[in-house]
Image (tube, rainbow, N blue to C red):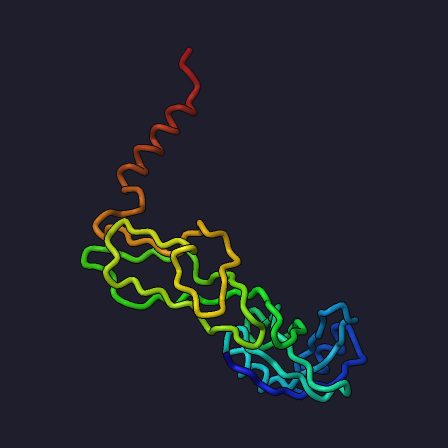
Amino acid sequence: MSEVRIAAEPRTEFGKGAARRTRRAGKVPAVLYGHGTDPQHISLPGHELMLALKTPNVLLTIEGLGNGAELALPKDVQRDPVKGFLEHVDLLLVKRGEKVTVDLPVNVVGDVVAGGRLVQTEVQISVEAEATHIPESVDLDITGLAIDTQVLAKDLKLPSGTTLAADEETLIVQIVDATVSTEPAEGAEAAEGETAEAEGEPAGE
């Protein structure tokens, strides 16, 4: 997994105005919490943090807080819905050797069988892993899977040292017949509409 060292500064001003000033200075407001400690309000360099967060479940080594380096995982990342810049980040304190529950992307590889179509119902899966050895993703090879095959969470081949935290019966992907439409036919929709309309009409006197 990726581990990034990043310098933090304590944050003593709060509220929307203070947050805007922090962002104008090129930094991101953040909260560091966990292990029964009081939440620490900090700010982090915006560009470095943005680059670090491109890696799922990146392990951050937080420095500069006066009590030694702290290890943390991003738990909640808030972005501007229009411009996409970072607005606020919640960070969870972790320790080496500690087990944590995280969501890993499901990376589908391989080609769909001829005549088939891939339907992916889950793009990530919840797993438990050691905090400093979190895999970047779970690979799922669909090569050779026949039409009508379903892959459940329990069927995934998880990376070494990782255990499933999600429901075993969670559907991840299925291979469907590409020639069969999953949408109702236009004529059928019209017929259904006419039937419903007819049923809704009052009986004649």
